[in-house]
Length: 635
Ligand SMILES: Cc1cc2nc3c(=O)[nH]c(=O)nc-3n(C[C@H](O)[C@H](O)[C@H](O)COP(=O)(O)OP(=O)(O)OC[C@H]3O[C@@H](n4cnc5c(N)ncnc54)[C@H](O)[C@@H]3O)c2cc1C
Image 1 (cartoon, protein in one colour):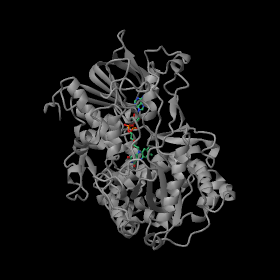
Image 2: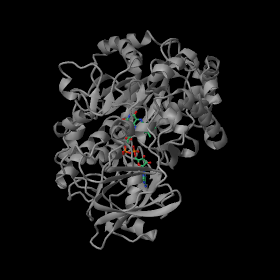
Image 3: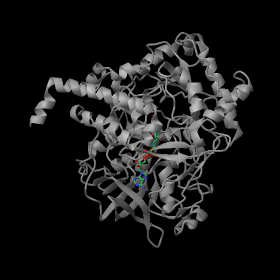
Image 4: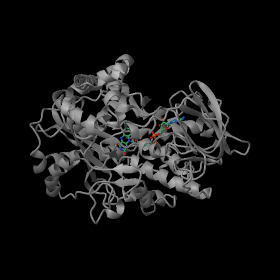
């Protein structure tokens, strides 16, 4: 009682604000020396726990607590593995029927700070993710420490949607039409559009041209922000000067400058668990169990999936699936779980002593993502957020009070520029140049040399961070397992620039970026630029093609849009893993529904596409089991 009184006093609240500010500074400083934070679990715990403690006193709009002490046993109709972007949708939609649904998620409920859009930059160091080492080819990642990229892999309710930058962008129409042309009927754009609309509650601006593309009243709020609107005003003259259209990123056209949309609802992150599970949390036929890692799919003599084995609080349990098991563990963990269960490339599985249930060579192959590197341009003050904004008590107060203002806006690129530079269909982008006004920082993955040459002169300065991203690289990597222990991480090789066209296109992209930055409109916002030459490439001339190729081989990184490791394909494709109805080859009662089923990566961020896969898959499963929606099943 006394404590409550103390915490409700005005002076205490002010002290709390100051403490939060101090935590914010510590978190920001720590983030910029991420290595230190990652190497010091104590420091990390101190920063995050202090922040969460103060938030718990003042912030009431945090995520749902789904955690439970009791394991799941017995039998369910459907068992969904993984509560990420896809898993939450599937569990929510299947439980609209009378079927009993169990959702098992390895991570715990989302932490308080994950709900605050502006704090997304802390997520990579939070316990909502794990860092998994990944590799590429010899002549790539030359500027990266140990030529090893730590991938940020979510482990939390909501999966990637709890830790990502909340950009909601659909692929190009032709991306989906191509999926269908590859032998996957029903996955073309026209067939998917109703499912995009079904998920969405669009709050942004609709025109007569974009109306039919957006949904109203769906569980997922999609909005645009003041920061994006400001950026649009800056970019409008640039677009006119360069002859580029300004487009809706989720509308009819896929080439041009696209002010972004975000999944934020009234200033709070709308993750998949918040949007799709929170409103139906009390359904009697839906059992959600965070903290449960599925180690193996169980099969009967007929190769039919009949349940799963999982670990919860150090103990192993088995649970039965009467109808199906649906794996939604994400691009890296879905192939791992398939292989641990005996489905995959025979040699790899047998060598680890795992009994082969079905030989499916495509499992873990075809790893796709986007490759990118960013250049920083110094801009005039006032156009990017600053440390002072982060520490401003008014910003903190207005967010805690009513979830408005600075902290309600995602830290995210504000503008995509979708271009076709490599040929092919001119309506399908192959390079995306995206822009983020921010404070100059050094990315921790690069070597100290790179950091001092390319980031040092801009540290703490206002910059426009401009990424050059390959929308659909031709090089493919793979995911493998090197141990039969479910606790071990998979081995990841991105293999990028394996195909020579990729690096050539990246060079074209950076030259186009320089053309955009030389425009009159852009020059108005630029400050005088410091010298940011990458010394290791300087011998190749001043910004020549050779210089930019060398630059790309030093700086290009894969991003977190990985997909395609259990690709959907017709039976004629030997590397396919699931059918167009997402059933796993060689077995029955088992589907995959997540980013891993994409046949090819889409031309932009992947979350919106995963949502549409999950919406469509839910309908496919309902059709296959003749399940009708019932009202009685909801709360
Ligand atoms: C840091 C980051 C930033 C990103 N930014 C954006 C963005 O702004 N916009 C965008 O469009 N996309 C973004 N993405 C990509 C997007 O979030 C993913 O494409 C999407 O989340 C993939 O959905 P998924 O369902 O396939 O897998 P996930 O969302 O990764 O979910 C998989 C879930 O399965 C769980 N799991 C794994 N193995 C097991 C197991 N054995 N048992 C039980 N549970 C298990 C995991 O813990 C996880 O919660 C980002 C991703 C990351 C990591």
